[in-house]
Amino acid sequence: MNLENLNECGKRIDEYVEMLQKTPYGVDMPKLLAMSRGDAESITTQLHRAADTLSVILKLLWGQTDLLNNLVEDQPIVAKPKHVIFHRNDDGTVVTTMDWSDGSVTTAKNFPEDEFDAITGINICLAEHAVGNKNRLRKLYKKFAPEAYEEQFNS
Image (tube, rainbow, N blue to C red):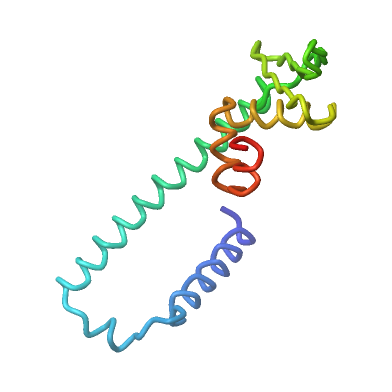
């Protein structure tokens, strides 16, 4: 070890000693020094448990991040629409059928008294696919728009 390295090492040691001599923020040094060995061991145990808990939480968060990254990289989180077909029935209704990249199919049908709107048909297919099925979609309508639900489906 040369003299320059030795001087650099000495400077670092001086910095560490100075840092250790400073009172940490929020620490009551007289109370800390008056603490019994049992109290100190109890606090140390609590700190170790907290550190272990934080370590587990951090691992879970990293695991979730890795999982999401893999989903995004390897496969789409949400299937994409492949084809949309509009079919007019004899009774005047139009059925919107949407084929999805995951192989599923969703459909939406307007009421005979309503004027057909392609965008509404597509939006209903998108919403149905997002929540899983028509029944879940209707439950959402009933929960968040009860008056409109009653008017639309029970009149």
